[in-house]
Image (cartoon, rainbow, N blue to C red; front, side):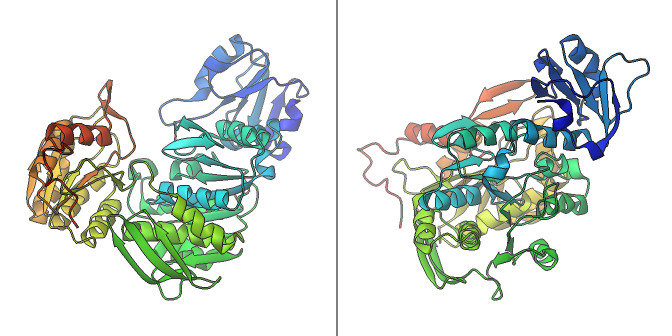
Length: 500
């Protein structure tokens, strides 16, 4: 494909040399340049692609696309654009034959609940007979092919490769978990979403966005003209103040959900145990009774978001109910660990103040004897949320156990001391153990019949990042191993049964 066919001419400020050359590939990584590649020099948080263009040209790149003016006396093709990231997104869309234009795209954004909502929406579409793909924090799924996720939302180039592969396999729809970073970095620029779903907004990622206003502004981009027109449908949480703001401003068709009596999809009745939830929802399609293996009030919201999306897209009620029922669990999201123990054990990804509070309060409604919450905070991330995480865990749990999460390059003890300020403020009972495996052992050994142990923060993750070391660490497998060491599940211990 020729360069002139790839780029939005209106965004090109300067084009040196011949723009009618044939491009063999697109890349923003100088190490992946092949002869005939077009290199996009993107500015990142820790590196600037403009520093690597000489290497790209030496490797055989046809030319460079940059939002920086060309160096003087450069004897190579240099295309100066207004926004290199947006230019890459549009070039990738054109290079791969506009795959998104042949798919029904559903984007889900918000602080919490994105992953579970995506799984539910995709399951509903599959139950309706659609061939689907899924892109999210846990995994990328192309039909029945699963691959490990590298980012919640891949870069625009990788996204278009994935969507083109999905189209090639006969795919009809893709459900995309859209992060605030992805929106701020224009990874989904030029995508036309059939539906955009908003779950909620609470403090997170302020190390990147700087303020809640900037964080919300990034999320809001999914509901605006993001290079291909606004979404055809908005699905909005009416219980969240930011959701109400979006609902007021959104001009296209919309459907709302929540406990609010004005919500289009709302519970007429519902109940939950550790085994799941039963609900009858009032909807524009009439009352819908359903059963889900996902437990807790926070999952009721995820179910309502998915049901609202299905209704808004015209999916039959029977397929919606079947799709919700098919999702027996979501990796690392309120995932139960069963080894014959007389208390509940749940592994969950909750790693923000709001998510942790909703998780504990949802667990409280399951009527356990006590709630023991193990938690920590990641290093190199929003430091401001650490005290509030500690206060939340201490206030709402019967026992909080503070440990290390993914400290990355920070001192784990410094992170824990930041959290400790809020933990002490809460006045609740707490313990501290830096070693995460020992902390999990402490939580499980402490548990008594009828208790519920929440192991939070890492969820589906299978590694722990300790400075320059990355070690294998899966909370779920660690729990199973420790429960075996404690001899639960052993036939000589008939008393080891999950309490009613």
